[in-house]
Length: 74
Image 1 (cartoon, rainbow, N blue to C red):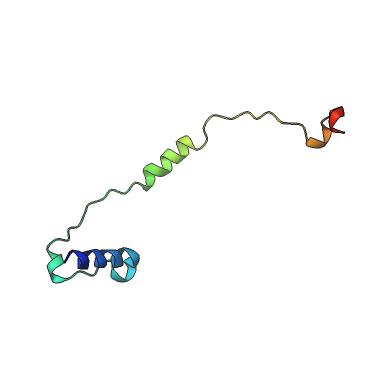
Image 2 (image 1 turned 30 degrees about the vertical axis):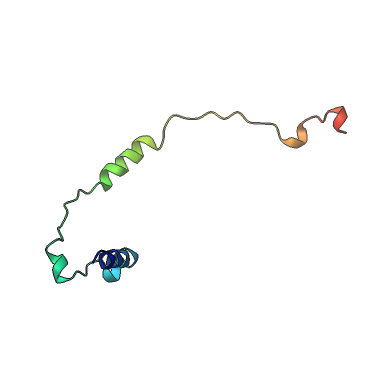
């Protein structure tokens, strides 16, 4: 029975669109609907607050061609 349950659960996870909602009569008593909370608006607000954080200052570097080559390297 444990092997059967493991295989069925693996198939449900592998093919959720085809097998996700299929349950046997024995499993019907154990299936419960879980309440959930929609968080899309909260996520968007958090992204808006934190996405444009403090400005980072970058010091430009000289291009490689403009640097002087030491004598020993010539």
